[in-house]
Length: 106
Length: 518
Image (spheres, chains in turn orange, blue):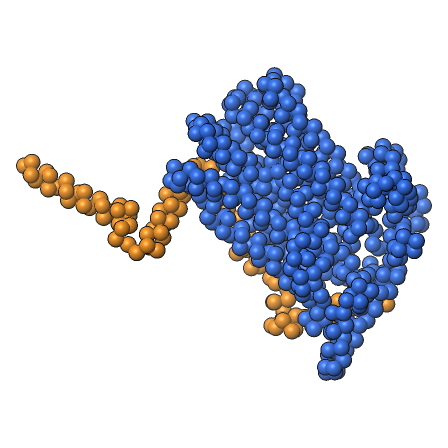
């Protein structure tokens, strides 16, 4: 009976060492070790975040969604890139605009 | 000013940019200053090993985090506006604006994704010294990030280190160091960043005062006030010194703006510095300059002459002198500058015609002329004047420039006093008993924001009509888009930013009320 319990404990220990990424590190290539540690650093940081942190992240995500997927796409196209294909055309257009603007009061 | 430009479009585009910039600037100065104070507090914790300093650091770090997170990406909208509303300008400035902004973007990305993460997620996971290094790098990185934006802005106030290429219709950077070490950039960086430090010091003083008024967290509040008092006093003195050097630089590179700050219309010797004054409406409505005299003023005699010329007999030219010229002081009249600007503009038209006729030889000759130093100094530097209709168009809104400038300066001196008193009372050990001062310190928080925003208002309104000093007025910089589209996005921004501000203030107040964790 004692032997059986000891055997089970050894199995459990081995299982834990496989699950624990820190124990896996020595088997990984160095860059993978760094990547895994980084992942866990951020993962642990986000999962154990305080309530204000979570609230602020919700605001960040909503804000970035509004800025990049609504405002940028629908309201703020790059005026020159939208209407002209090449830099040469854009340059000609601006040159026209500048010289036209100054002509009006000559 | 320019007939074929829709003034509603120009005004709404300006209003939208102003709204975005003002809101964006609510978040920036606190980030700049609080990051340094947190790094100082954490340094004390690491050196002393006292866990109370860690608790104090983490409390201010929470408020820093809220401000940083809510403010993040609000500045990117300004870049959207450049591409959509100000496309002529964006194209005309070429890589001069693009390069600093790209450096800022890369810096901000690395800063935000790495060291800020260590600051917030790294407690008890990385070594104390590594964590402290990250906190310092966040502080230094935030100021370096601001440097590039301010370099780009300074170039608009004093364009240097470039030549105009008519082939691409863009300015091309010829001297990176001239752009980076532009005297306006150095003054602007030091003044703006130190003003951010001062604002954050007043924020820490104000919040700490609230704790003392509520008789809570006395140790934390007093220690915070000690750090903020020292940091704030030092910063306020730097702000005053750099404000003075900025004004001297302005008197040389943006003399009309400088004269507008003082509502100094007629040049004179022994010119006084107006400490405080109230302007009245012009006596003569038909006067094209619409000169506004003082209803009353408190003046420091001779000080403006001493500031600009080194002695009280120095002549300080006024707005009138800059508009109508003053040969004895080698000040060109705007009418003459308009003629010279038109010579550069005519040459640009000739270039356009030569390209149309496929006359490559003529086009190449003109292109080279735009790189000729004499032509640049005599004609191209006045290029923007070709867009003006009347010489008086170079005068900004004097009351806005005057009041915003004087409000900023008066509050700046008040803050020196507040920081000095705070430091004195903390060192004397009687800060908690002086409740009158605690209330003043608390109410200095909104005053700090008003002063900070006033600084930008005077800088940007004071340089009107120019978007790039002497080279491009705002009316030539706008895109030909519908004013309706600009009004729509103006309203959208007003809603979005107001929501963000409400979120920031409410989350911050809740965290302050919760206090530091035990």
